Length: 401
Image 1 (cartoon, one colour):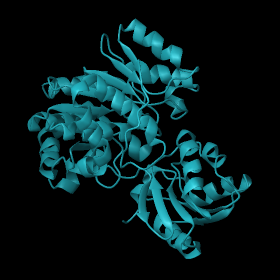
Image 2: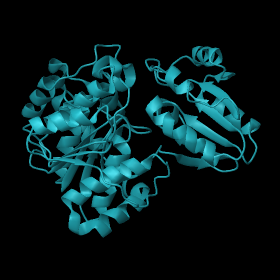
Image 3: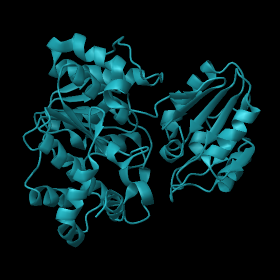
Image 4: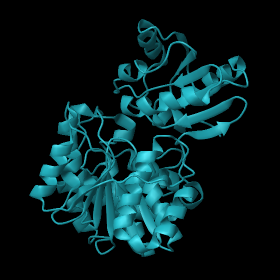
């Protein structure tokens, strides 16, 4: 079996949320991952772990912490999703991705059992990561939930600390239609007696976190405000830095100078991409994986601050997303719109996206590919304009950089 064949076999596991969304009976619950974990002899059980949930900012927070811990001399295994350009991004130690040979061995050795069990893509990739982290004998593991928390496959872990970034309205069909209901699902990662850090304190969700932490007898810490610098450029990173710093301050208070230095070296230390990432100049062109209204509430003001002319919005969406909420946040004045699809089977049809946008006064042409849209924007843009590419992880993943 080749590496490409092994990855395609993993992709064929149903359900695969990155590929199919919730169209194939999205699978949640802990019974299957527990069964898998047991079959594989509980890999990584004895490696200290940080568990991270939240609506947005999980990936950035995870990589901020990993970069800080790397400056301390620790080898940190990071499990995160979705990937952008390479499946192996889902399991990393620093900038090193899980080797192709390890992926092949994982599938080849256990394929029969995996097939009989009907395990999901996410469950299998989680186990792949845990096995590799154990094989590499990492010092720490940071696990990012896929969606939710309480019934997310990663919730089989017994962490040293849990962290919840923020709460927005996303994946409502599975997590609930109010921020309080979604907070309760995310707070499901809080474990008995284990310290929990919550970044966002507000009237809608505060009581939820306090009640669940009380019930679990888990010490609850609200993120403090810090002035640490970071190479992650997005203004929205302030909250992620606060969360990461609060967590590392609890775990490693004596190493503040080292782990805070790591916040300025996230790209070098972890290879994280796609967060207010500048990919061209004159005009400045940025891409960002933010894909819901909660994210665009931060992205739109930053685009307006950084553009000295017109903002060229190259946007696509997953077909199962309520993109109307994002469209409502996009300024009509001073904007040009380019609606695009992506190579993902979940992508929204660009023409349909354009029709919805036009009904809301956001008129623009639609394009079959991100590259075509980008080429058109570059033709239309002046040096002082800003080109923004995003709306979906799939859109950013299609960029040829």
